[in-house]
Length: 80
Length: 146
Image (cartoon, chains in turn green, orange):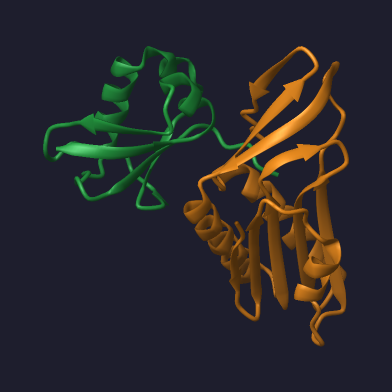
């Protein structure tokens, strides 16, 4: 399946794009996606923490992803 | 572009326009409240020894508004909040500009202080907003862990 991934902050700079399409096997989880992204973009390994949001909610590691999901990579936040 | 949720009790704003303290205070005005606590986060001119020129805030808008709303509800569950406003700026900010305003009204002062502190501390931990500091000699994405 092809996932649509939004990137923000430092992850946007590391990947060099605001949005990427990323191929993952069916039934891939949030944890699988993080691992694959770090392989595809080794710069992401340097981040302290990276979370994944699925449809505007923080996702769990074992949560299964679907092609229709809006997925965002959430590097450590720094609002305020 | 402004994203706003305006219920009677909860007032959320994420905007690329300057924030207005008066607007936040008016949003939490309530007859049942004997206390209003307001926190104003502003852009300072130094981080450690480096001189800051400006900040750039970026937000995942839809999720940030949702998380701010959830946070306001959570705070309201922990303290007897009459009204609460969370306003956050995005875009380019300069020294002295307001980045965030938290305003909370409650019956008594102690709970207003506590609710306000909890809200800003939690916002910095979980609301998907990112800040880039632009120095005289470089720039860096802040990864703040309060």
